[in-house]
Image (cartoon, rainbow, N blue to C red; front, side, top):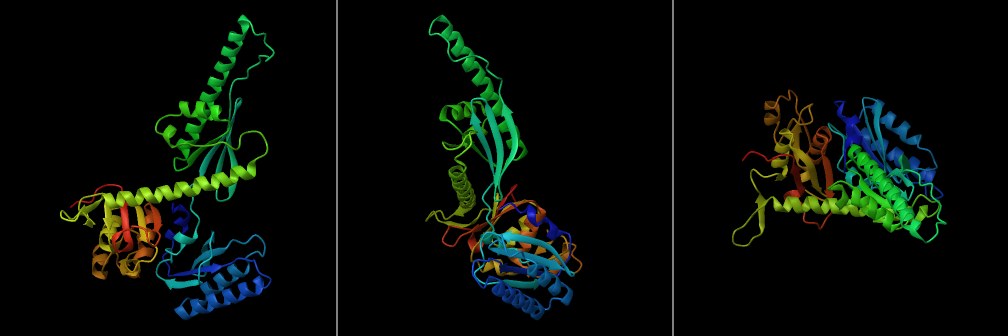
Length: 381
């Protein structure tokens, strides 16, 4: 999961009120149930020690939720009497979550927030292409790529002029395919995290792919449905969601494979025993804290149910001032370090470092102890 949407939480010291609550409106008594959930969250915050101004701010904010078009759930973060961030969630939590702590309660967001990658979609025909960005909010236009206009007439006699006609027509399409490929490459350079999808007739897609630069040409997904002609949007939207979900699954699979490759092996059994020193992976809270301090954190991996993630660590006002103990955090320059959950402290560091985060589902071969990381550079032995 890309974490830039959490940047507003870096600018304030806290303590923080965190509420993750079901806001769906699918039953006849939905309004009454919502009111009861909001009251319960307010009581929990007050019991945990939250100040009245912050509790009231959260209560007013949640009570103002519109009855129509509500998401399945919301995550609300507030401090000093102000709601700083309100996030719609794709899934509702099994039970409401309420916290009052030095840091925002971030870890529950990962499994609840849909994070399929965005898609750069090119709808292609023989005259050009329309490029769109597809994300969790739907599709929006980005650009158009228009090829040169062929002004010939198809009713050409089948004699010696036929070859000339065909040659001119093919040359026009070749140039159009190159224009489309150049625009796709340009848009992808501006948003390299996007999955590139081409929709249109097979021959047209193939000619565009042939002209894309390497390695982009090897990562393109082609869909037979869709095109610039109207109609077929519903089928195309469904296929795009499948592409996005598959890309997210592939991303996790690659991350876990890279993590496994960084582990040392028992010479007798061949089983993974520990992360290699000096490698580009880290496992266990102490090593991942070190990676965050060194600013080498690239992707944070958290097990969906991990005891180590709930360990207490110490942090300062700067997100990367992290240590297992209070005295160590003080030595890093944190004058008044505060205790925090390891997963929330590491996620705050990941936000500050523009790193990604992945929740590893139960049953998958995740990091040892449920906390791991892929690194931007090797840690010193």
